[in-house]
Amino acid sequence: MTDWKDDVKNIVCPGRIKVPYTWSVGETGSRFFVALRDNQEIWGIKCRACGKVYVYPVKTCPECFIQTEEWVKVEDTGTLESFTIVHYSHSMHPFKAPLVYGLVKLDGADGALLHLIGNVKAEQLKTGMRVKAVFAEERKGSIMDIKCFAPA
View 1 (tube, rainbow, N blue to C red):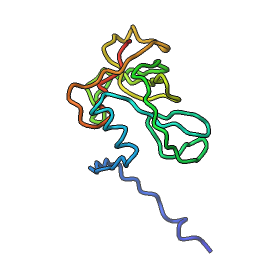
View 2 (view 1 turned 60 degrees about the vertical axis):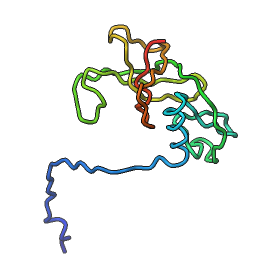
View 3 (view 1 turned 90 degrees about the vertical axis):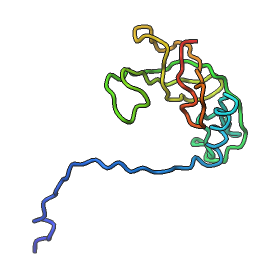
């Protein structure tokens, strides 16, 4: 006896769906973004068990699986751990190409924050360079309140 699925051919319909939505960042994310917007401060959250400081802040430590509660102000300076130069424009990018995305390990935080790197020529970029947050003049409560990280 043959299975009915043996005679069925997969049909692939290429397409693109753009679905607008609203997403709440919750209590933890809101506190982080309000500090960026109102005070130009970057805050992380520290796990009481392992001592890691997370930026973006998380409600539960991904290492220890316990609730995090201790807020810690971290520096707006850090080290560029890695970067990539984007040579094409896309609607998902905040600016036209070319632009640079980098992983920045903020002083006082564990892990790295992915963000735009600016105010620097491509040939001057190098891993290990010190960078500092450049805050937007008009801040709205989003990660783009940090306009970019630039050489310190």
